[in-house]
Image (cartoon, rainbow, N blue to C red; front, side, top):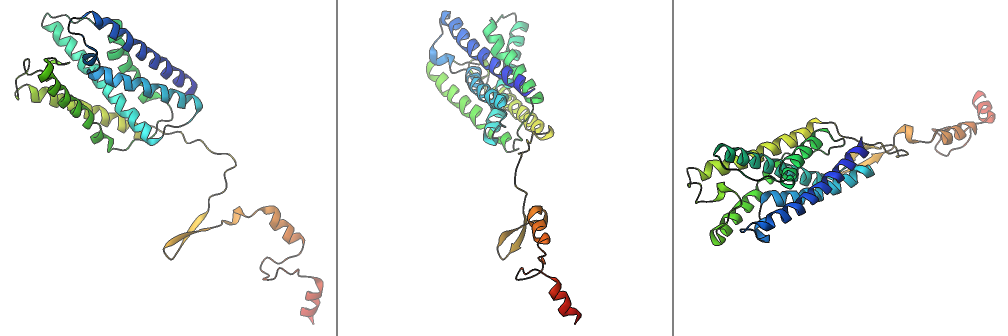
Length: 268
């Protein structure tokens, strides 16, 4: 199972990289195209991060190494952004169709917005060995999209270009339409993050046993610190057996053997 998941992640990362390059070539023919505009899309930024995360997590899965907690948190954030970008794009395409306006969706855009979004969601739900993510990540999911939105609005006012209609003041009224649209987007990010963090807490985690590990020591409190106290079963049985064979009393302070002469002296 782990090997299959690792391979699928690497394949998905390769598909994402191919789609990013292909979509870049596709939009070269548009008059409004610029390299800065291309990399200003939330979808492009989240999928670039997704390619990196899928590659690293795929290698870790193939090697049987659990994800560190910090990387699992990054994995959850990137997964959230990819899923939300797919949801938002799907709504935009559906809305445009209802207004008799067609948006071209090449295969590369379908991979970035729909197929990879579906894959990362299924991967998060079903992949083994998911590291538990802390709930504080829900708040940590907001700074990046908020900073991205502020920068996009600031840049759009200077170059006259916005990647999404709900950020363009010429298409949405402020605050009547601007606040609800962007509030829903941020609320969706929070909701998806809550779901992913909750799933990481519900699903069992793999805890591989380490063979040959030394026995755990109990601890007793002495003063302000903890002092390990060896358990009785940690004493090698062979050593105890040798002492008993030599006739050494385990309670004897000097470790002297108890012989027949001692017994005679006691009988006298």
